[in-house]
Image (cartoon, rainbow, N blue to C red):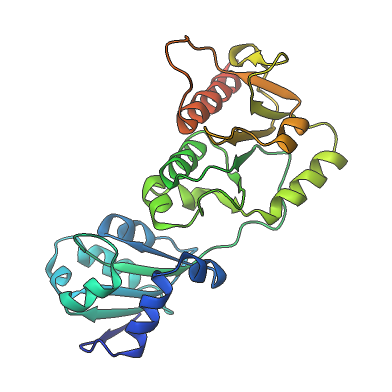
Length: 271
């Protein structure tokens, strides 16, 4: 870990960091992510599989009681540079109304090369709300599901809001991007029959508690507005509905995923 102090708003490193964090597209192209706040920093600083490149710290944070523990984790990372900046300069980097710091720039870890259909897979199909995506990632980790595929029109799995909602679940998951959906389709067409489970309201749908979920399969969760897209409806060989009253029109997608995945956990825990 290297430490530098920056005092000028014209510093090239400061301006480059601002350009990166201001554009999700730039971060994605560079295979980087940014996260702000002590809670996320405490988690990131102790993830040995991550490469943290830059940490931007407002001067006022250096006296915070939690900062030494974060700094101790960062000290083990040879490639990391920690920049100390005046609070007024730090505000140029932060999108938060009340910037607290630190801001961490890290390289997005690569998922395994190939999806493994011998293990469960969750596909997030057009889920745009980052809070929902982060919550579902947390649910997947809690339910023991490691492989998650995100469509291109879902919220980016490494955005700050998703990271915040995921509460550390990312460290247990392999996140696959939209390009892997083509690979997954090929696997489903070429392998022995794999259960493809989607929550659909049609004439063929079975109640969740009537479906055998013991075998590994692919779960597809769609957005509340659009639902599961047609190509996944066609592939689904297990159409599932969650029993509920007619008092509400629908359930939030994160809630639905929790109900489905933990019914799967329940069935597999039975003797």
